[in-house]
Length: 464
Image 1 (tube, one colour):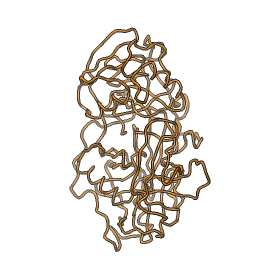
Image 2 (cartoon, rainbow, N blue to C red; image 1 turned 30 degrees about the vertical axis):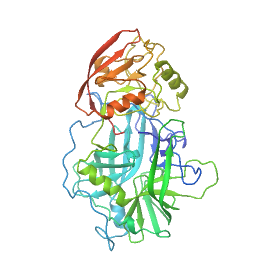
Image 3 (cartoon, helix red, strand yellow; image 1 turned 180 degrees about the vertical axis):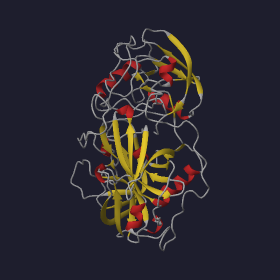
Image 4 (cartoon, rainbow, N blue to C red; image 1 turned 90 degrees about the vertical axis):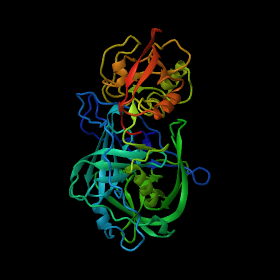
């Protein structure tokens, strides 16, 4: 799971619009959108950004993360594409607008807030389709109906990281309208379309007219900050509509007023050569197919149902198993990326130091804080466990399973669930096979060289 500065007011956008304060500084704000630059034929790059270690909030936190399995949904919860005509529920730009929601998320542990867009696809169940990158790492999600101003808390039903598709559910929904669904299989080059979305995170839906300029496009997304992670999105609809940050998860609408795609990527961040405006949308047929599997609870190597498991540590990134090398890499990445997430432990792809507040007391590892409530003031430990292989703990998060077990900054995790741990990526692989509610053994070496073991009661963390 990666987090992209191209999604909004991060390093590429530079804005620090004040939001409800998270002392000592207000959180940074970023707005959902994948960005790309043209390289070779059809390729692209996601902006670099900050990712956080996953965290289950302490009792005093105002953020609530569910740990119970998602509620079963009806078999017909996700609509099928329209075969033509007026679509599901009739078609007009106005009727689409009634089903568009503005999504705001809190990323407490990277000291950020984020914004994007979503589409109501089942009004009775409160189901909303959006991009995974809109809700990833979120410790709190709300959705505001753009046409009425109603705001609902939301929970994650499931998501597909590789396809960049997520399904969320509004809690106690009322007064909702589903967007009319079209058939993306009938889309042709030259068709008139309109992209709708929370443009630039300004909390209003802005239309952008254009045409379909190409079909079945492939864009390769990679982190401009230099991490090893990248993803490729296939079968995309390309348009010259002005898709901008904040539009992610919003509808691409045809001339009949039906949704035929989900806005996902654009070239509005930065690029190495002059380009014409372009945006990319996931065909709605593809998005609904994934959403249908999510609603049915069909997990797969690419689809996660509900929330992922989590330990609660900040770690580095990459495939180097040497803790000293991990520390050096984290030091080099300071402020630009490096303390990533993973499957519930904080190890995978990138991360930044953020602007929030840590808390805790000294832990004897050369750090002034024993645990953190965000990645503010997070620093590379000056004393590291004397081992040659394992995942270095850069910091633990207050109230997390790791903190409860006794892991501290400078410790090195050497095994989880009976499996040897080397580089942070290996820990990610192990965690991918676990679930919230599992209790697993863990071994680690302290900064002073003591070998310890304990049990981790995995809880539910923010979506990846």
